[in-house]
Length: 309
Image 1 (tube, rainbow, N blue to C red):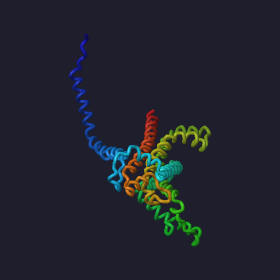
Image 2 (cartoon, rainbow, N blue to C red):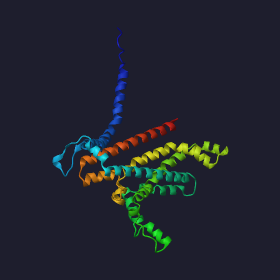
Image 3 (cartoon, one colour):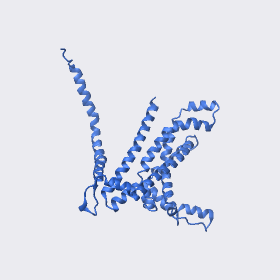
Image 4 (cartoon, rainbow, N blue to C red):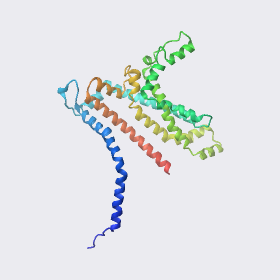
């Protein structure tokens, strides 16, 4: 029976030093990790726990375990289904329009011209504005029927007899969509512009020398190259837009059929004081966001793999 090899004292010492070095590098990160857990994970765990409870502040004596009853109520409530549908409509329309506009602007800003740096800085300004401030800007400075810019343009073009359009009252969903598109187009443009600037220019020049025109280069070379960037921009935009509350609350206050899921949660929690139902709706939103984020992370990893080849 052979004896097991005994590690050399030097190797054991090196292993201990390596482990101590690893802990020395990780120790400064522990406070930040604990803070993230306390701020994000513990409240989410409490939300999951409350979502299985029958807890309404107006009826404190009826508090108890409800099972999946809150989730069934959310999915069967007509207001909740309408909010889910409005969330889908807002997310798809805002992301699609922002992607198209962002692609067009990125193609223009990819060209060399005088003052390109200033124009790029000005183009990302809407994305830097606080969301509530941006919504207030659109509601009062642009949409207001009495002194808004849009009706002012109508009066300047059509004269004093121009109709005073109530933009929010007549087009509530479009009013929110345009405000969000204005805010999120620069985000899409930045991602797509980064994709355009990573193109292999030597291949593009070779295609031009072979007789390919601008349309063929865009269709067969630029778009395939931008596909992962388009997917990444769309997925990241969807993650943020699906959680949007500021524009709906500020522009329409959830009225005129514009209440989305975040606004439904707000009404259920603060107005109806139904903590269990609001928590169940919040868990549904988080689960949907996690599914979208999973696809976004896969897209990011695929981009990294392509760049390291």
